[in-house]
Length: 417
Image (tube, rainbow, N blue to C red; front, side, top):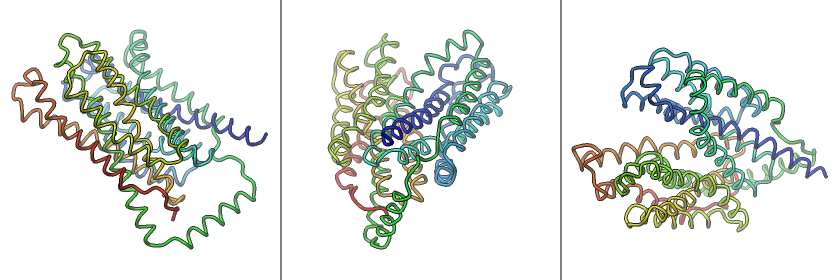
């Protein structure tokens, strides 16, 4: 009976903590539904909107390691409450900004404040549930974030119609305060454990430390690097193709179908949100994360090649968009391997670095594809052909093949050092 109570409490704790991930992703993409209003309010051009939007991501990426350090050292509930309150402050700051500098600063502050959140959520999941459930839970946490990214374009326009963009941001700020209260009431840092459990953990850890060899420590470091490369390879398709260049590519393939194309590309995100937890669950069922990682990395380049090289109707391409997103959701399994091979005292930092390596795909691959397209065509997007895009997307295909090679050579069975 006690085990069931702890499990139900754990589900509640992790679900409420993961709400912050939804909140974060919603705010990360908020400017995309406010572009005309923000351009008018701050007298911006398209490049200025790009800087305003990306300021969140760049600071979020830069503060991954400090965020991971805080996740290792601080009480998870206290950290989430503080981050939620500071996020509310940042939203209000953005709503009252009168100049570009203030708006960018508030967005950058949001990125800093949210940097520890996903690692804290994964840390809570590892504390409340047995390790064999971690791949599934990590996928569910990521799915919460994806859902938040999808809710933003649905909710924010209605709030903007009622209150304007500034009023909408103030409503979102109020939600941050409410979320902080809910976290303070329901989230608990660790479950209750018996003294025998603590002693058993200590003995196991000491034994592992004493028996650890330099060879195993070196192998763990190599596995960690390979996990980062794997996550980068699969996540690049989500951030660079689905997040930016996929829409103009399909505009060229299906002219006059702008709205349908946007919905079709959105299926990649939906596929990822569904695939991440299901692939984590499958890894638990087969008791081998690496096998599922290899399968995902083998299928992903095939599906992506179909998307960019083979002709097909919109319904067929929509299906392959969903499946490409589903298979790319295998990037979440890299967190599971890193968690398994990490020293418990440094797991937060290593998970944060893994997360940062995936986020690095956007600032690296998006400009690279843009540079290739600019080199091929000199008269803007309207002059680019389908073949031009296919050439520009080859680096993404290389990234996926790199993920496959990495997964084949990855080892996941070493004990923590």
